[in-house]
Amino acid sequence: MSALPEHEKVIMVGHSAGGLSITHALRVFSNKIEVAIFVAATMLPWGYQTEEEDIKDVTFLPSSSVMLTV
Image 1 (cartoon, helix red, strand yellow):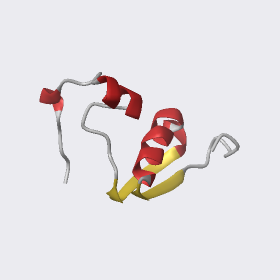
Image 2: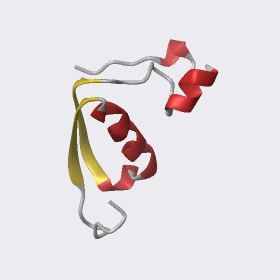
Image 3: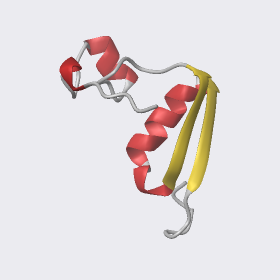
């Protein structure tokens, strides 16, 4: 991802544990990802950005700020 030219973006698809990889990529390379698609993927609970935060039970967003778009 770091070698991708600045003007180019990718579509990422993650299945199963690949969902955690997409979550990490979104955090590190958010400016290079056009769309992230989670297919039956492992996802962190709402408000967590890393597995480490989940283990330590540290959130970055209050649970009251959940918004779903369909």
